[in-house]
Image: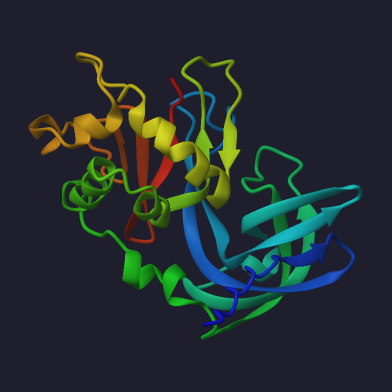
Length: 247
């Protein structure tokens, strides 16, 4: 019996930088980032809240001879002010990151926006939100780590995920969904980064020691968490995996 070939995966939509006008669809959320003076180089840098459109599907943005594949766009300009979280259709012009205040590779200068019902279930924050304090959210992360389920981990990641090195002068990698899925298996087998006997991250998650870890980065700060090599932040009420510290 003849079997029809599986359909080829859809190619990402292609866009161009300003002055071309672009229309994109995704979910608006407020990210917590590190602001001036160091923009994350120091743990004392203040936290700033940045509006970002998590795209419903990755896009490719032409920048001269370079093409960037992006999952998220920081929202810029007066049109970005006061946008409510949720699925929106955004019209504006795309431009590349140029300063420390720009937290995604490509940003969009918002001309106007409107609510949309076109976001897929896979990107539905309500469906994947891990709410409450970190103690309530951690079991889902822990279970995915122990099962070596990279797809589940990426579903709760804030993309692009930051992957700094352990030293201050180590370059910070920025991983989109595809790059994160590729890196994740090796990370699960790497040292958990905890101040105790060395063991792989997945093995630590499967052990009783990980049931109720000490997760607070600073006493009294409840919207950030770090467990070994993993860092998390609560954004718009949902906990996201935001960084992995490479060993």
